Amino acid sequence: MSEQPGGRGARLPVQGVVREVVIPAGVAGPHQLIMDVRCYAVAQPDGIVVIDTGMPDAEMGIGAAVEALGGGWPDVRDIVLTHLHMDHVGSLFAIAERAPLAAIYAGGPDSPDIRAPRHVSPIGEGAMIQDLEVLATPGHTAGHISLFHEATGTLFIGDAAAVAQGEVVRGPGAFTSDSGRAEESLERLAALGPERILFAHGAEVDSPSDALARMIGGSH
Image (tube, rainbow, N blue to C red; front, side):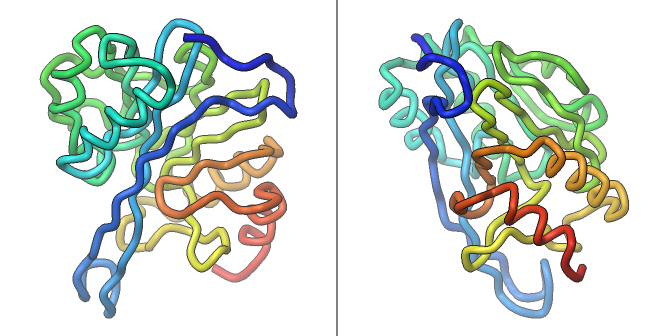
């Protein structure tokens, strides 16, 4: 497994997996909510990194994403969970069983509450998962993390923000543990000036740094 040449302007080899989820009325607000759930397989120098494991039964899609990167389950060396919510850890057991060489990581405050078939290593600010830098971005959950590939300006933002109708938006308040810390995390991520943002909910947007800044500067 090898990455494309570094330097901003290069593109990080990533394959996304997308599934649609329906949240009944009354759970995240008065109306039914339909959203997509996205997780990612990323080619790295020492093997493939899986970022989040999606809803239950996502393993076939993740396996296809790994194959699209030219690998197989033995090439998956790291599983990183941005946080503990079910739509991000739902296929953890299935993925971990298929990728026995993969270490499992999650943000320190979230890691004790994640059920897994083997140890979940707590990680925090500044840790490196191969070439991906861990950023502590609490607010959505206490242990929420994001991942930044500085060489290509690629940010995996987890649920720190989402996309709805082509615009970057905050996550539903019903699923946010601390809105003040969430806002601080958003401001910190915007300051990175990412050239590409990969969301757990919603497709990529053009000029993502500008879109994120507009959202932060707008009304809550």
